[in-house]
Amino acid sequence: MARALMIQGTGSNVGKSIIVAGLARAYTRRGLTVRPFKPQNMSNNAAVTVDGGEIGRAQALQAKAAGVQPHTDMNPVLLKPQSNTGAQIIVQGQVFGAQEARAFGEAKDQLMPYVLESFDRLGQTCDLILVEGAGSPAETNLRARDIANMGFARAADVPVVLMGDIDRGGVIAQIVGTQAVLDTEDQSLIQAFAINKFRGDVRLFDGGRDDICARTGWPCLGVIPWFSSAGHLPAEDVADLPARANSAGRGLTIVVPQLPRISNFDDLDPLAAEAEVRLIVVPPGTPLPAEADVVLLGGSKATLSDLAALRSEGWDVDIAAHVRRGGHVLGLCGGYQMLGRSIADPQGIEGPPGRAEGLGYLNIDTDLLPRKTLRLSTGTHRSSGAALTGYEIHMGETTGPDCAHAWLEVDGRPEGASAYAGRVQGCYLHGIFTSDAFRRAWLAQFGLTSRAAYDALVEQTLDDLADHLERHMDLDHMLTIARPPTRTP
Image (cartoon, rainbow, N blue to C red; front, side, top):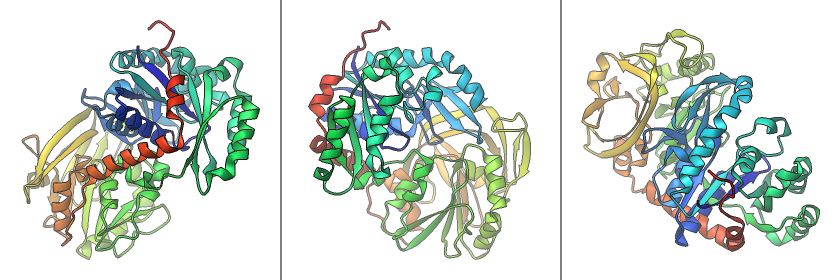
């Protein structure tokens, strides 16, 4: 069994995902075979794996950092919120069901065997497993049935490093307070701590660091300065969505309505990286700017409710005006469905059963069905012949006359639909803008010349992140903390 080490955080969004990605790249460069693992994740930003399932986008990035293909064992439980209180549950890459939060909390015990099975299987393939926690182990109200933090660490016998976030303030209380609320056995698993997102001269925090060491008895593995290039890496948390915008760009203005259940919004990252693109994410309560050249409707985990939200914001009126002015509209997955005549969910796949009129720009209709489509694809942009890769992750089937006007060719079949002389287009494929040739061809229709190499940018950022952690963390000490579990799989 591989050695394992778990990174837990004092809260959400302290940087656990990015730190694990950087560690994966650093230890891989040292010659170790590394695998990322997250027992339970909650995100609507998912990736399709080589074994035909889906996992959180962060684990796919961490796999890339480790130089391996994403696999469903890297994130055995994925929760995809569909409402304020309910989520679709993905277990080992496949739909397990949908539950309200309370029912899920009471049923988590039955998911731990799947989590441990995936962890044990992954441990047979590598030298080191880097485990990422979720939220915080200090959430004592969730501890009894926890499978994401100390519940997993105890069950799998994995040592823990606790990560604090100094940027949000109160980091001493974050770390000392976490120790204070944990029981003795949970405390014993924490072997060290580190502090993330420091701005300025790290020597100014020497006293604070030493105070934490004295109060907890844990050694410090490093105070990590702010990594300003993190925005070049695909985001997973919807809280990061506004920061993906590139409001300083010029040449082409792309506007993205921020819908409540927006999913797979890392589709935007390659566009935001373009110097000639001005990408604007529009929050609720704000009209879509009239200067938009393109309105991009992204994926959605709850298409009918997001379509209703779009209308309640008045964005449907803004889009109508945009199209009348000669503007372009692009819909991806759920956004593609919204552009059609109707969306029907007779079986209540994404919420209460229902049907809604679409925006009506594409002569297509969508039925939501129980079977989820999950596949990696390759294809071409029909008008330019540019190659592309992407992935499908949806539960809808779309048909109609405008499908005869497909603008992509994917795996030897037509994909998508278009109308208004190509100004309105949609498709089910996510991830297409990561393909440099396609992105350049798509931007060229607006008179832009792109020379950006997106995958190379991500790879360089991962290398820079690994260098950053090598400089500011004691990675040798961290390796001595990692150990094979003593439990028998």
